[in-house]
Length: 316
Image (cartoon, rainbow, N blue to C red; front, side):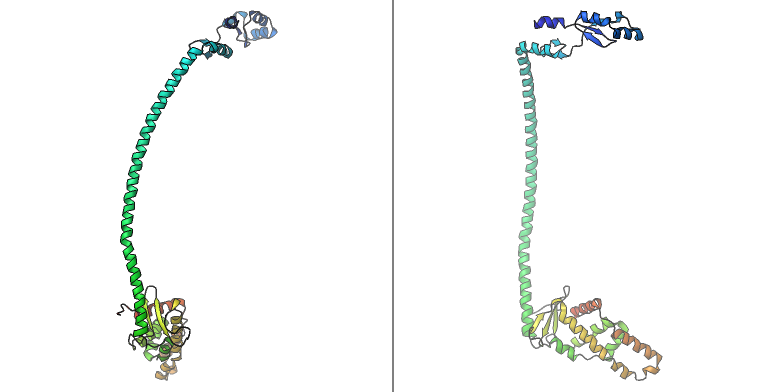
């Protein structure tokens, strides 16, 4: 039954102008008599002779080589063509297996290449790690030595200050003993308050021996200063002056001492008010001695003092 229907549908009756097709000749003849077909012929100068029987386009093919115009026909055919389909399927599977084998070979080559590259990377990392280990091994003794040196230096400075400098002046005793000279005032007049105050400190420090000085610097870069205090019961003896607070206090006291010493210049120039040149000198002296010792100028004084009182080496 299916075969007869299939053979019957092998040829179609088609009217190209009307886009009409059928497998039944009766229906086709009936179409030729319709007004739609006649009007189409009339306007397109088309005759019934143009209506012809054509072979349909073959669309559906079986793997065995047969072709069918309809999907249903191909479907019915494949039910009887299992053996051939199986063979084709086996061929496809063989092709797939070959492709898989080929891919496996490619994958193996890729894996081997990656393994080689990873081995090179591991070797490089190992060498770098070994180099780092050697560097660390070399640094550890140095770090240990630095700690030993620092501890030794700290121990040495404490012995030096508490034993060899135990009779040193306190910072307040030092400031109270300062005598500002006329030469000191002239330095301030000519070079400014920073140079003037630094000069007063250094000149009076030079009058004392190393062991009599009330302050010592152990690190000029960090401006680490140790000061002796005796007046403050909370800080007896030598101590590290954090942020140089005690030293800054002493600097301001010296500045005040200098201002109180201006009378020495007047004593040396009793007629300064009658001399215009001496008037200018006195005004410049007053200006510089009373100048504000701000943070910047204060830091410059501390730097100069640290360079002067720095302990280069301590013998124990």
